[in-house]
Length: 236
Image 1 (cartoon, rainbow, N blue to C red):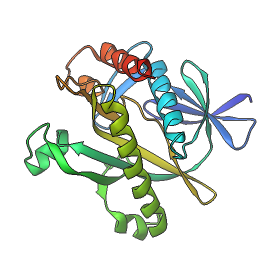
Image 2 (image 1 turned 30 degrees about the horizontal axis):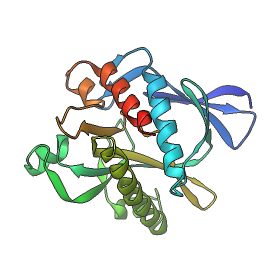
Image 3 (image 1 turned 45 degrees about the horizontal axis):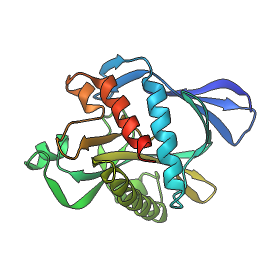
């Protein structure tokens, strides 16, 4: 499989077409962004860490029969993925009140929610990723009722699997973002699952080990990313 022309470039990744019409190469960049791209930074090796974490978690989810776009890891910062018809909705699953959720609803920062919350946001930096509900998705043609039900079921299953996964490593899965795409009639998880897209805290100290360290100028971003990767793979 040979990498060809650039298909798409986002804030954290590039996608390249290949000589296989059903496959793409996803390249993880060393850049960090926050607040819809208005804050930017980088550190060397960040793309390799996100690729390694995503590879590990995609493979782990596949063992629980959760379909993803992952095919194989190609290099430190590259993976081969299935080419999907993307659904322009970001799905956010929240287990702990923090950030915008705590502020909007006047909840105690760090308090565990009685039940996980699933939110849907239109994937659009230009519009600020506005929150939508299932009826917006139906009315605007982003997804069918059947597809939204499937997305919700997959997101709930992934949450249960990953909460347990992180708990066994002394970590707390605070919240995370998923993106989905379609292959024929099947719904697959796409994009990445990494410290760029998850909030993960140390269970004992509440130390943040994700992109919030960059968002809120907490420092030691690279150290936190590397520690998270080490704790994920060392317990394998």
